[in-house]
Image (cartoon, rainbow, N blue to C red; front, side, top):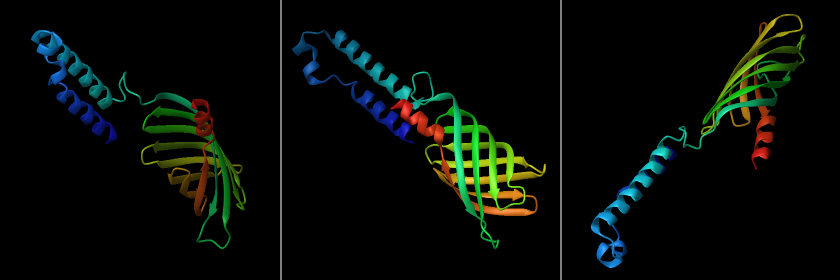
Length: 192
């Protein structure tokens, strides 16, 4: 939306610049009508090119980032309001992130520990999709615990906060969590 508004502003300026200002009129500056029209046309073309670059921010002249990054983060949380005892968990993920701003898609290997489950440790994979403008994250993953039982989780998050449902055997665990995006901190420090 902001990109479109910026492009419209630049485009409107380009249309306004087609009129030759009074101080640039040929009779006062000594240029001919043809020279003044050529200069005005050049100025209009440059403004229109700038407007097109803003409208195609993902293009070769755009400013949106494209590429791959390493990803490392830690999730900490707890909950399960339908049980007598609370469940606590920690999960680390290392993986690779596909950057196509404003969208980020991450696939990584996870190691998690849920207390006080009988088999608390599991190793698995996690997929995350995040849209940067709204900061909404959709997360899904699964893995095997040390008894070779499957464990699944689905989550919805906003910035560093989230809610997750974890399916561990017959248990259905609902937990709140906080994400510590270590790779984002490293990237921000490196870019500053």
